[in-house]
Image (cartoon, rainbow, N blue to C red):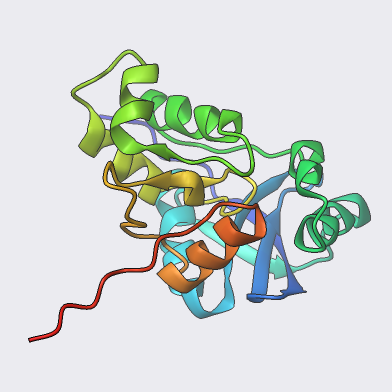
Length: 182
């Protein structure tokens, strides 16, 4: 039987962005542990519990450098995401996927299958998708840069409109879904 996880207490801050209020969860060292949207707070809490067990969130300001880097990103300085320290808990495969996502450069996208192949697991497209969907650190660990093999946006934990905005913000030409008419 697996050992019980030690309860964790993290700090919760809020940051206004062009696409809604971001929830920033940091540890006592100021390292980012989760970033999600206020309208998806329940999803974020579920992911935190999944990865850390019992979690308590207390109001606490995120480090100024983290807030500034995110603010700069949303103002167009896309490289600032690289300045943000983050840490995640997850399975070894999830860790592999999450550490590969920041290597997909801003302004580019990759399909789930291409990332699976890059991770030397070419048949693991669904596992890549599942890991991508369990990513607790939106934007900074850029799960929005993964798309379907046909160029479709597929899904995004923060909603497809945010994914579309983030990709356009990074310079990706996003194909609009076709509307079939009878």
